[in-house]
Length: 181
Image (tube, rainbow, N blue to C red; front, side, top):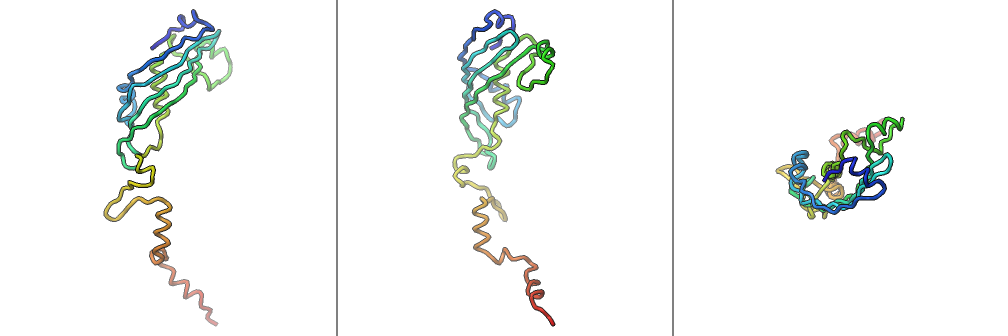
């Protein structure tokens, strides 16, 4: 959905509500290799304008499939984000004579909801995602001579096998502890 600035000026001071289902899967997957799948995106909100600003408020709900941070197993995550964006034209921004990082400067006389939602989904991709087993502390990967351990498991292994913990130089302690006179 797109709104021209002239259309929004006609409704100045009156919010325009929307409740949509967007299909952004192909766009999101083209922009990010991390995304394995994306359901239809439910968006509810409103857009309104005043003399200088255009305010876009909405909530987004969707399911995104990403690879587990630990095992690369696909994990489906239910996401819900709330977005509030303030847009201004380049002329208005230049007249403010200040750097306001809280506003987005419009490059064209158009506000594109699909673009805003896509950007915010990509900005909110979780940096750490785990399968249910991995969240419980299970499902660690291992190889022939290595394994991934939790910090607690590592400490327990270290305490149960003190000889492995000993430094190869620990025998030198005996030499220096004797005081030759």
